[in-house]
Amino acid sequence: MASLSPSSCTLFTTPTSNSSSRPLFAKPSHFFTHAKSTPRFRVSCNTGNGEQNMKDDSQNVDSQGKVDRRNMLFGLGGLYGAANLPSNPLAMAEPIKPPELDKCGTATNLNNKEKLDINCCPPVTQKIIDYRLPPVRFMRTRPSAHRASPEYVFKYNMAIDRMKRLPANDPRNFMQQANIHCAYCNGAYDQPGQGTLDIQVHNSWLFFPFHRWYLYFYERILGKLIGDPTFALPFWNWDNPKGMTIPPMFVDPKSALFDEKRNQSNLPPAVVDLGLTGSKDPLQVVANNLTIMYSEMIRGNKTAEDFMGKPYREGNDPDPGPGASERGSHTSVHAWVGDPREKSQEDLGNFYSAGRDPLFYCHHANVDRMWTLWQYFLPSNKVPDKKITDPDFLNAAFVFYDENAQLVRVTVRDCLDNMRMGYDFERIDLPWLDYRPPPQTARAKIIKASSDAPMASTIFPVTLDKIVRVQVPKAKKGKADELLVLEDIEVDTTKLIKVDVFVNDEDDNNNELDKAAYLGTYAQVPHKTTSKTAKTSIRLKLTDLYDDMDIDDDDTIVVTLVPRHQGGGITIGGIKIIEAPAEKSG
Image (cartoon, rainbow, N blue to C red; front, side, top):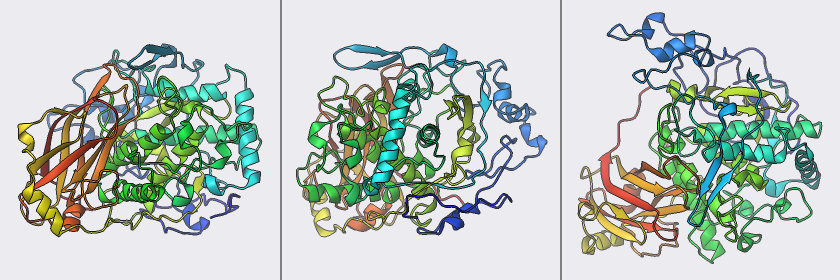
């Protein structure tokens, strides 16, 4: 699979059952047989991998004889057939619906200096097609950007150049495609029928599905423009030491892939700093990066929502809470590349402008790869719960213009399997897979016992404009499966925010993350919400850390919160440890 040319194997048309795991270095044909054709809308869904099962009609009625409106919607011609039904505030929660393009408003970016209004609304058409994935006749293979051949780079540059030359009102035009991210992320779209509540595709379980569909159509548009349906986007392999610089193809000023609005201090050979620690030691930065990847992909997740993000339904305020990958490596790359010379860290450093940098799509191709790796390649004993079966997740929907400039409607349930969508990734080693930090034992006990840190209950809520260290009581003494919860996190959404979390940190060197004391992070890219602030919480799994630090039998732990951003912008209401819920059976 290391070749850049796509596989010539043919997809079997006979439906077969989905596999819950894939071999790390499987042959192409091994991947093809698990894709299957399924009816697009069914009454309910019991699994998160595309399998849909019909449910007895009696299950549409609850114990009080009331009809479950959500199930009825599916029975009345699908999710969209019910779009014109009157809104009932007492009805059950429903999935996020696609925006109404004719009601698109001005997107807004607020910062400390000015209010910046941006028109990023797409062309409006009255015809919307419910998209069905086409049969997969060959597999598009996304290459690692730092390994791309000169021939591939030439083809990719030509495709972006042609996209930029399309008429300005063509929805496939480069700026029109960039505006998709702006409109969905900076307040141009309201939730249909929900007043002024924004649609936001970040900081929730919609993050991965939205961006997967976004790149899917972007990729197909580029292939159409150069007459090559096998064309696949590259991924920026920032999780591998050999790929931890901006890929060379993006730094040639004569290339269509170039963007001058990037941090000039972080051009090659600078190593991407996924921790935003500011360390000047490239070897330490690489070690930090691998530790971060292990933490957000394996060590810190208890459930699917911990990785994917919190539920976000119709009528909810935006930004309910990001998952480990989104608030970690994803956000750091945005911030690291964004240009500090620009008022709002344009281009990649702000959601409204991020899509104007061709590097954005290469970055998000690797983010999408992280989802695929997490779904299929990580051992189940390390990441046991990988499914979200909630219909409000599976039936959430978006609209995009496809390669033929047709407006199409898509659902989350149809993008859960990248192979079924006709693309895969070049196989690259995963050096972070077993990069568990070394144990930290005796001295960890010493610093906790001698700490003069106050109890958390005495100082929270607290504004994090400096390092904060507190003692937090454990939920249960001894061997326990526990979670550290940072609750009532209130953030100014217009600012870059990043806070790292350490437990019983023995040496207090905050620039070194490759140690057992590093637990995880909270971070956000600047964007706009209805109220300019958002409130959420995060939880971080303590199980492995307890083992690595030999603190099972302690009554309390010392938690250190280290802000990486400048100034305030974030207040944490409280911090506590809870027992982790039991694993799901079956």
